[in-house]
Length: 164
Image (tube, rainbow, N blue to C red; front, side, top):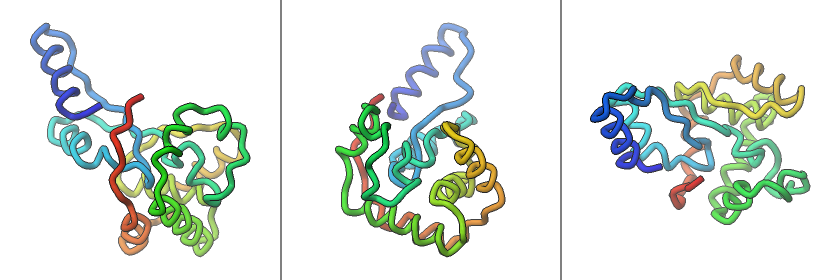
């Protein structure tokens, strides 16, 4: 959803004396940061809470880039859409996540979640295994330096707006 569409919904709610939206759930991670352009600044300026989902990009940031043998890769239609947007920059970002995670001695999923936390977000996580729960808990103790954050982010290039 674009920020102007969200503002329309807020205006409709206000004009009908309905309760305005107090939070926004948006897709946001190292591979999809389009929400940083308008939606996140809009929400911050209007007091709307932000609850991003999928900090590990539906598993893409949890394993090396060429590891695509999961059931999810074959069945998840949103993941198929994401894969259609893939660029060389995405491969670089995943490789950097792998590199920084290895240096820190943590999993890629833990690092990707820690990055989201470092941005001040409390993301919605997919907990499909005990391993994912352990990784999520571990991310709370990970510090991402400014230098590491820049390194993870700098290869990002813009993508089409997600419509889901």
